[in-house]
Image 1 (cartoon, rainbow, N blue to C red):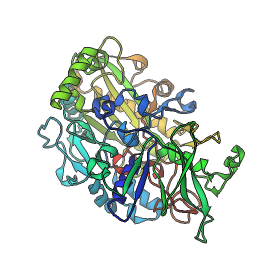
Image 2: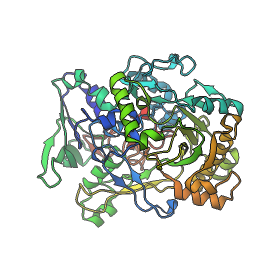
Image 3: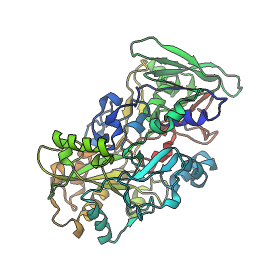
Image 4: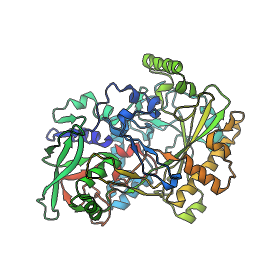
Length: 534
């Protein structure tokens, strides 16, 4: 996964350590579908675990996909590449939950700088006013940049904010309009595979990578620590779903970085989890940690679509093979053009009205963290209809109160788990999404958009800013899907706490020799927080 490559790099900086990295997927080399930023929203089933959630009552009894990377680099090789470090509140909440000040925003800054390598955008445009160089690092490993191709809607998006009393801003994490940052370099994806396993690192003699290797379980042995019954320093794996299982032993530690879905699944299959549930499945419970797989938190997203009066959208790229080939040729020859970017150039954050917080409480990590994210896309999200030009306004709840779970229902360690995000099980989330739609309509009412939007499209056609809550709620439940930003299924907590799975040092509680280091350990996150995972 994403974090595993970072760990492999950092640990092997010490020549006395030897690391074997096990990756379920294949190589990222020459995989142009993931290398080209613009293609990030196109289906890539060969590089995806192709998970589907359980039926969600909060989505009007629908399920949704849950993209996760099945390739070296994990989800950093298939995600939307949007970069944020999260808010100071997020880190300070981690410190409060764990009782460890090492997690505070101030104390994490040196490590954020170790990761971040700020590079010029692909088109080398003047970035003055678009970011603050004083708060970014240029000496890290993973490249971060601004968008490298100007879209026809950029000026309208920024002007609309100014007309409504806001502003464009260089202050990251402010509740205004910011310029989109991506983990890219020279118009190409910068993943944990391309950065932390770059040629100068992968050649280390103390680092080995084994591809196409699925981990089934971690295996127990008697612990030499009186406070633990078991140590888990052995890994059982297969290189073919129908092939034999193999075992390898670590002299020091096993570190799981299989992600929000993979890490809890491996723990459960290993007998680490809710003892009652494991026994019911026929799995011998070895360590009773009921929090394994619980606290699943994901951010619901709606792609709200409008028909627009323009032919300068990206829709032709996504529906016309000739146009697509032309821009791909430009990309290959010059490293320029629309393919150097993902799907947006601006982004906005908002907090909900105080009335909602008074009614439901505040699930965000603090007063300086948002509940809502909105961004415009210059075209139809995913594959457009045969005709027409579109604007998509994406609305997300980035501080959801709803929680779900990940469980298993088979003793086969390679059977897909049951993924239940629990969308809209909290009344706060649906109220916040209602408010996001109202903000969206207000934003599009600015004079900057005059004459541009012709009509609302699809299910949005019947929605108005003053629609009844019941009408809005039905639209929300019909239109929402995953933003693929889950966290929380192996949550950390303070040492000695009777909940959580890992301690502040990310050691699995009650055992020796086993850690989990990936997005599953975060109790929450107000943003998708790519910066967290590095």
